[in-house]
Image (cartoon, rainbow, N blue to C red; front, side):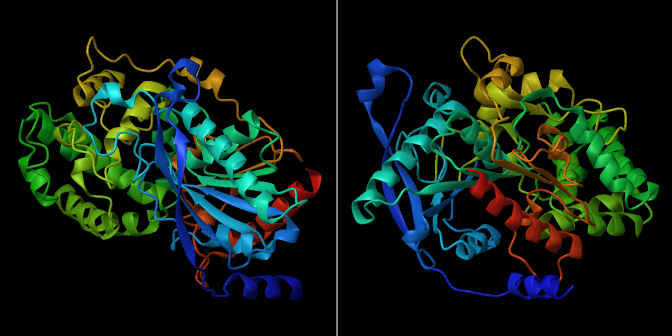
Length: 448
């Protein structure tokens, strides 16, 4: 008990860090040799050396995913804390096509220009970057052989698991948080987990979510979604296409994301506290706005179809990756937590409406994608929060010494839950999980 209290007190220590931004000239195309000389692009990365002792020979590489990378994310400081404990250099790498790591320098996002946006190119980016930085560090630390711990969450967690499997000689350990490593086309299990997580707040919460979806579907069938989108200040965003099914996705996804990111209790309490579906819908709008989940431009076809490219633009690139490689199309399950109209027919239309690709854009062959993205390497730690709907595209069973799997079970423990900056209000189960993660990473480093 004394040891636990000491570890708990260490968990909540605050500390300062300084990060420095650098640019790496990354190869645009790693696989088509005749075209490799066609160019490079500036890939951003950040280094934190506040706690770095080169004699320990450790580098933590934090992978940013499908968003503009801030460098060290101040809301997700636990990985930096673990790096500090290990006296490691902490490095953050921005993903190609996101933020300012842009191959085409703010040019229009024509579908043809997204050719080099796929997981294989991103994994090769990581490998080439590690080789580059190893060379740089060898100049100032002769004789030191550095071990790399690659950390990522969600899609970047998938990259973490894949890169350790594909390039085992470059990476000592991967920490893959809520890692989506299995491409799935008809992703009904996402909907199923929304049900199971909502059920933790009782059947009344499940019924309330269904009531909201039913209301929106009724308005959709009546061609009268204006009163719905007005509540979210989203009417103008969805006016660009006569097909209004994206509104069905928009509303239900706000509720799913609130559960996914650990706000299930707030959502359920708010929905249960009111008497009718219209008032429930207003509560969804309030919570969605509070947590930054109600921006309609991430759902509206006219926004996702725009060729305008800025550092904060991410939706068009991410849907390209889903529509051409990963799938993860969230379709209704037998538990009926979303509209029946959000089926694969909708997703086929949605992908084609966004990109208007010449000749049409078929939904991805996820069997081929999955075959090429092996995630069963050794020295990989897979973690999931037990309320996260994305866990079913990851690894949440069959733990081994060489590939430990940790399911974090606690109230409101969702997506990438352990990566967040520790706080005294965290559930004790989460704090214990973080202690376990520290121990497992140390063990995997010894095994390497």
